[in-house]
Image (cartoon, rainbow, N blue to C red; front, top):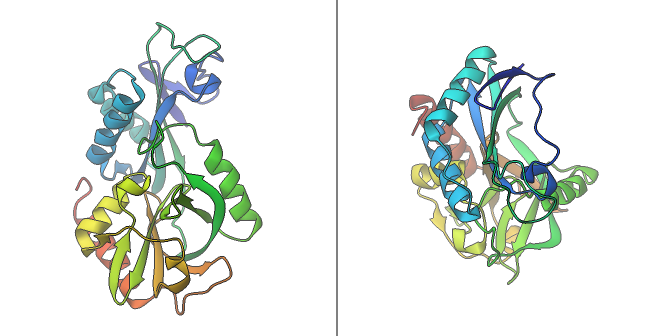
Length: 273
C-alpha cells in the first residue's frame, strides 16, 4: 500500500510523520473520507470544497487542491481496490508542545484502505452526550474525534454500528460519522446544519435527490418516526432497524428503500455530482 506524504508516494512501512506534528499533539487538523469505486473517487470536488472550508474555519492555510488531486490520483492508481476509503488528512504540521502553531507549514497525507459494502440496515443507539451547536469547531470536519471514539465504542458494546447525538438544546443532531434522516407521514426530514451537525456530502446529495426537508427535530422524534435512515460516505443511504430498544417496522421501509434506490442510481450516473 502506498501513502502520499511530503509531496510524493511512500511505502506504508517508511512513511513517517513527526511526533511533534500538531495533528498528533493537539488534534489540529482536518480530514475528508472519500469513497473510491474501482480506483475512481466519488464526489471528490464536493469533498475538496469542504476541506477548504474546514481549513478556513480552523485557520489553516488553504490546501493546494491541485496537489490534493494529484495525491488522490497517485494513491488510487497504486492500489485500485474495488471499494476503498480514501482518506485525506491535512494538519497544522510540525509545531510546539502546546496550542500555538509552528512555522513549518501544514502536513498532507493521503491514504487508501479497502472496505466492503455496508449492510442495507443497521442498529443505532442514542447517547447522553451532546453536540455543541455553538462551538468553535461546529460544522468543521476536524481530526478532533475522541468524542466520537467514545460514543462509537458504547454503540459497539450494545450491538449497534452508530451512536446518535442531540445538541445542547435537546434537538436531534447527527451520528459519530453520519447524518440522520427520519420519515414522518411519508415525508423525509433531516436536522438543519444549524443544529450543529456536519454538512455531510452524502447528506446534501440525499436532500437534493429525494426532496428531503431540513427540519428542527426533537430527540423524541426517533420514538415516533415511521422510518429512520443514515447517510455517510461509506454507508450511502442505510436503513435503521433498531434505535435503542425500538424497532421501526420492516426496515428498510418503502420511503427509505426508494431513497436507497435513487441514491444508487444517481451516484452511478455521475461520479462527481
